[in-house]
Image (cartoon, rainbow, N blue to C red; front, side):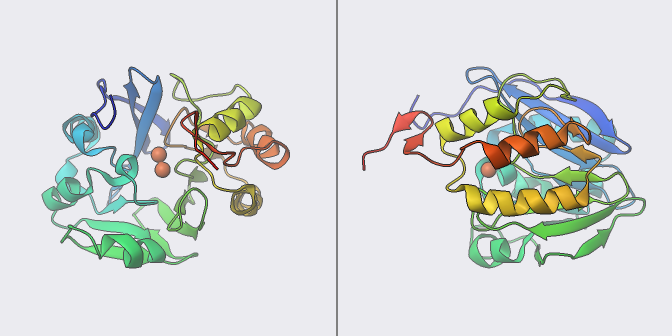
Length: 252
Ligand SMILES: [Fe+2]
Ligand SMILES: [Fe+2]
């Protein structure tokens, strides 16, 4: 299986907040979900694209809600295949679409890659008006990646934290269960966060935002009253890299 492309199923689409659709695909072997979020508005936004081989399926799911050629932004919260593997094709099909990432992401990766479409790097506090929705950018470096950023949709109070608050397993579109301890153990097993410090700084900011929703790219969306239990676990539990990558111990 080393290096092999993974077997993925069909996407399902659920409206998880007003005008916000969760497109979710379950990877059969790992029972891990890959989510994209579509904001239906005058200037529609796709947040994460899924991996390159998922493009046709994700595109078909977007098309259930709106014409993919209308996309105004494709948001890439960090440079990794499940976040942006389909970026080139989504942007190519939509004449007005811009790839939106953090300023560091634009400088480090997306203007330096085999990608010739438009890219815009955003700084913390920048806001994009989509019509009814407003998307605010948060720079969150070293939460999993150097170029990490998140977006917060202000009218629905929806935070899109990429891999933070992610849960393993085949989860329903909305999760009310407290899986806080379990997810910290999972993060440590797969080695997704190098250190607790940068994550806890961001968790403090997220608490200040008091989101009505947190929509992670793996697992289900968390309603606002469920989020504090997960935040508490991220403050109290160890979850940073302890020498394991996907459960495999690295020497040293
Ligand atoms: Fe990631
Ligand atoms: Fe991810």
